[in-house]
Length: 339
Ligand code: FUB
Image 1 (cartoon, rainbow, N blue to C red):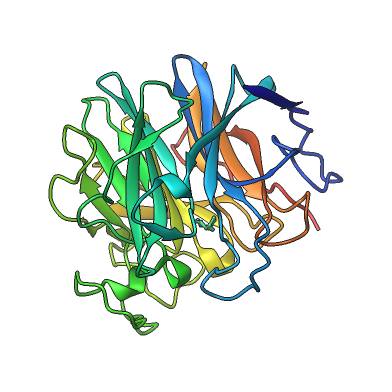
Image 2: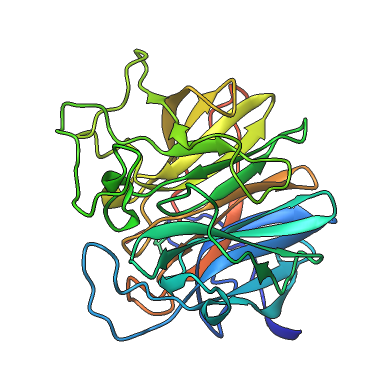
């Protein structure tokens, strides 16, 4: 286990500071940080960005990642440990290219690592790999999760032990190719005045290796109880699902993609429906915005990324800052980058 840099901790959110916080990892590029508290420590499951020399396009070909590392720290601001390669694309027999944003979960003594990668037909599927340690290495199952598709799995375990997977991403994430439940190689987007494409949710089976039922739409409604529309780019779902529970309510948060925000919607059930509430994180430096939210020792944190170290959209660095729930249950909007 190699030790990397010590976190430089939080800078105060003064109006003069360009960045609210500093990169957590500085000896490699990391993105899409899914953080969890396991055994009292914080474990981070990010993408591992590399420069494969592939030109940038709207389907994200430049994000050509080939492995994952897991990182841990006792608490925010503490020393960060890099646990090395947790999973390599060469060990996933069905994988073709592009290991994108992963997540992890724990149940019945086993740690589960969930990852989106394109199969040999260039269709994104969700894989699962297991370990007896939260740090890995993880052993992949020989096939992707049956009936899984698209990207950005987030697995939420409720207080009663039930687990749910949220997935989906439009454009490069291919969600727009699954409107019939079958893969179609052509993109099909709703018109601007039609309901936006929904993220998907499935309950996990007890073994955490398969879905208990099909992926279904997760409804995100506006303040009038109507679905957010496809043309509502400031609020509609794009990618980067996350779920957390606060005061008995379920908070579904996600990226708005081409408007670069992390926003949230609140509901009474992990299966929805959810009502849009507002912005958690304003656009950061870089095109993508992707986060996770955890609580440790009574404090809430948002992990996110930007491109402070590289200035390039596909070479990102993960960061963390505190998150505040207001007394009325709303979340205080964070501005992490000032131009
Ligand atoms: O890291 C590749 C992709 O970029 C992720 O899957 C998306 O959420 C976006 O951050």
